[in-house]
Length: 168
Image 1: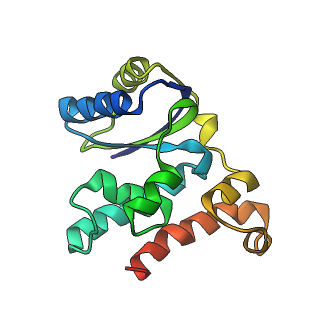
Image 2: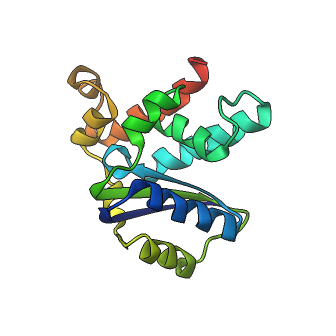
Image 3: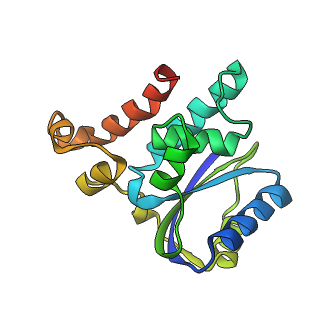
């Protein structure tokens, strides 16, 4: 089961944030990854990244040893963590954060609320809604953006996610 959550808040210490997130992952036996939501174009962006990452792990074509890191690579449309982390990673300060949680079962809202509370974040799925600025932040130029109508903007991101398999 894939759960995508949007949130807002202030990250005071990235290392502490990641430690709390990893504790949640271990305590709940889930895979979790956090992203700068300003470069996420909707839930389908992250769902597609998870699907591709799982497939890569199953086929043993993965680049990393961790499903969470593999998801990060696909979501970023990159094959190297040194490019994916600065592009998609969480940063200190006021932030819009997207989470993807991969679990064998549907994640209940209570555990997600507890995670967000522990991380001092407030749930706000609106941060997942993309626009032209999101596409630019992701690295797409205006020429590429203008090749499709607004209702197809998400397809540009999904194409970049899928292209990761080709650029291996």
